[in-house]
Length: 584
Image (cartoon, rainbow, N blue to C red; front, side, top):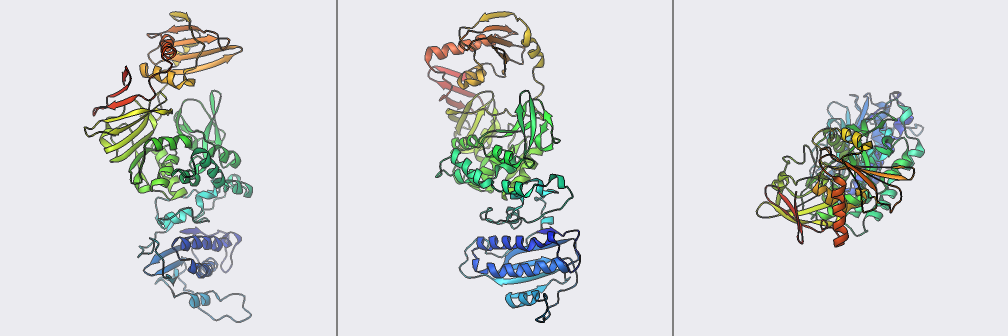
């Protein structure tokens, strides 16, 4: 790792900013050796690291200090680079000298020590103790320094994010450790920039560092302790994947900046709720401070309980190779925590989202799943045992059937509905399954920056026009998104309806709008009053809604939930339940 030296440092002196680094590196040493099952070496290695690093800060000439810890053969190797070609000199200190004993201690306590041929790096070794069976005990290839590791890009001012991002998880990533990335406890690199206005206060840092308590509480709310998803939810720092988000405020969206308000940040991140991170083509990550947006949400961090429910519907095995959708990367991180990142592929149509999620996965947790930029309804980058899409589709893409291995399972939702579809691939190349009794709604897949312009011309007519047809409904006023089964049945029959509602004094109004120009406006005063309905365009949307409610009253339920699903190899998807059948 590379530690940038305090610009105010002077030869022979250790500044306050530089003096914190020996302690930080001791904590990384301690975590690493415990992870490698070498606790007996901790005290000696800490002392050797302190002496070498302090010497490098005091007498080195470079702009940064390099530090490496690795296992080579049967030894632990500690290397410190100070940039100076002047080799350190071992000398005998008199009893009155306050320093000068560092290299003497290194010489006495290390198995071997020395310098590189150019004199810029001092190294020492300690023999591994017998009994270590950790997978890191093998001949190690040289570990690249942070500057040589392109996957890691620490922000110019890491104090604008939580210290959790820069603690030793990054160190474990640099060292390619295979163990618990949460074992270490300190930062590995800081690049200083003069931006004091954005620094977290010490109180704020303490607040943010309390995320584990909140994550544990969230896990307890989302799953039972014995669930295999409990640990991922309890240990993945969701707030790191959502540093900024959009909060609804009537018809507008207000930008929320987590580091600027740490308490609100953690409260939002560790509440089981969806956080919108992109409105139309405006990602919260790139918005100016204090910005507002208007439009349609196009990306989000899905509420954790729903992510876990989708994964559970997929019935993921420990050896399953999975394809998931990216978004902020939080759902991808949960999958990596459960399966290991080698079994996870994550895809999104937005290259910027994929890049941001990739960086956060590496920096926050050390995960490097395969990340792909592409339209999930098109050709997929591999073959999978499970495909779990936290976006909605209609119909099921043929490419999913091609990418699924025999017996593999796909889980998604049908666009515009609350229907979760889970189906297993058949030997003939199609799939069979059912609509789960659970319910969920996701944003539909998009094939560009946003979903395109809304039907504003339809809205302008629907807002006040009398329409071609005026009726009185026999049922109380209903806002269809409040009734999942009714909305889903209507959407199956007439895909693409959008809904609006308002309250004006005692009058409540609901609008149904369709891209083909059809619209309906229903207004009622009392909650049990039958609304007056104005309709226009080629369809009578409210009349179609009333027919569905007739069936609900007549049969006591609608047939959508629990329906059997058959998908042919060409993607034709048919839902059946009893005598009811519908083909997407």
